[in-house]
Image 1 (tube, chains in turn red, green):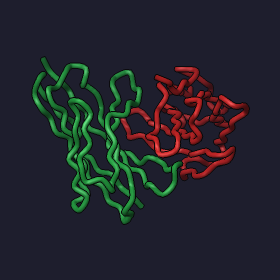
Image 2: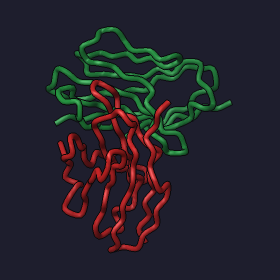
Image 3: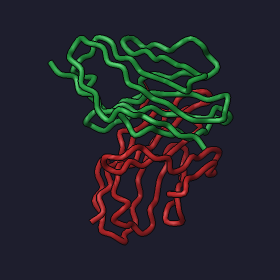
Length: 112
Length: 116
């Protein structure tokens, strides 16, 4: 069964550094998402992306965050200047028309 | 705005027994989807079951079934014949059906522990 692939599985970064989280969605999916889960808390929506543009974003997704689909397969989340509170599990998801969202295994981001 | 409430932080069940997890939601929308996702200790997010609000028939997937009460805005998950591998955090989630790129809104989760 096709899967959403996320790399790296764990990223450790110094506060203030830029980080890029990578995702390869399922190949025939058209809708892409990023979610965040701070340890012990619920999963929170960050952003959705369709047709090469952001379709919706949450209040968490401020100017420090950006998303990009640089080629036909990758979907990236960039955090420009990381803060301690950015430490979380970041999940990428993708879906096709009238299809449920399938999640990747997540990237654990640790900010020191 | 939509809210999803899971009022049970933790449930314990013995192997082969049945456990029911509750979920309520609040929305003014008429067309939406409801989901249960499972998050084992590995922290993957795995889709368990999906329910379309326009369908009266409750969804089932093998040992997993839901009791969807639209008027009461209730969406409970029943796990039958519980197995040790069912130990996980279970999240209820809601999505408006108006657009294909709808965001999922999650509840706080219920930790299910299956004991031998």
